[in-house]
Image (cartoon, rainbow over all chains, first blue to last red):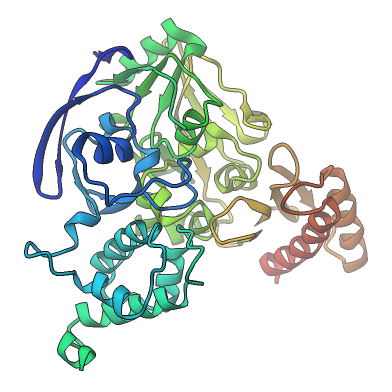
Length: 173
Length: 271
């Protein structure tokens, strides 16, 4: 039996954005805090800390998940992706991110990372996701700035681009 | 909002998890998907001394159709059940109710049995289990026992589970499975239900279960479906639920919803 004591830090290994992580943490360390404070990847935001606002949404083994409702020790051996994984290595914004920028789908930006991760997971599973699917995914997020309409527009356009129906040259023109 | 400190056990077998439960009693809590327990920990409404993670136990991952019922093990996540292809055929009520259980981002981790264990009065899984007349399979280091849903839910987040017991599985009967209906009113899809109703056709009429109104889901059998008598019975049922005013809705609005949705669902499953 592996009993990990509250007072000590314990070994944790998982893959974060393609990179192997091998660190230690206390049992009560939330995944959201581990990513921000231990790794220093501050793209993942922490809002309500009880699973309602969706700001901390990350991707675990292909599924969108609340990082504030996940203990770091629970992701041992799993593959975790955060918003940092969406941009290209050259720092160019990803398809979803640039659609958000074009459509002003963010204002203060606090909720954005979580929304991007949910939509990224949705489009990976359902390339043909329509407006209803997008709106359903968005029910798991709170945005107090945009009124959601530009987010839906950006998401629809990004989905079309990911399906190869439009390309960025024609959109930017 | 961070959890109070706790020891963490990554259980390697069910017996091991049960041993810890037997030794630690109410100081220990099982964590499965954690989508109900983690908010309680973060807000320090729950401060267990030890958490037992059961999600790596293959023996608890089971969806099995047998002898007129579907058995769902403790490690089955809500998203996994929703993606289980025979769900619509075998357990139509769950295919209707599951999309209302939290959001995609919580169903990806939350389990069916975890939702039953948490017993939130407005939760969909306890409601569906009650409406279908299902059973909870509890296991301790000493023995295994079964409890029917109507005896299991005792109050707000209170159940018949003893401190040394693990919910090993829940069993949903598939009888009259096609003749069922579900509807929910919430402020936002996926939020806690103001009123949630499930109706199932039975031998003698229709069983209507209501969540979000009383301290636990409540079911009632409607045998006379003649219009006037049904309205009276629905009205009496709505009052018996002892609805209360709260931040989200008034008691009167809840009674209205029970009468209105109740009638619609009963018509739907008998029509």
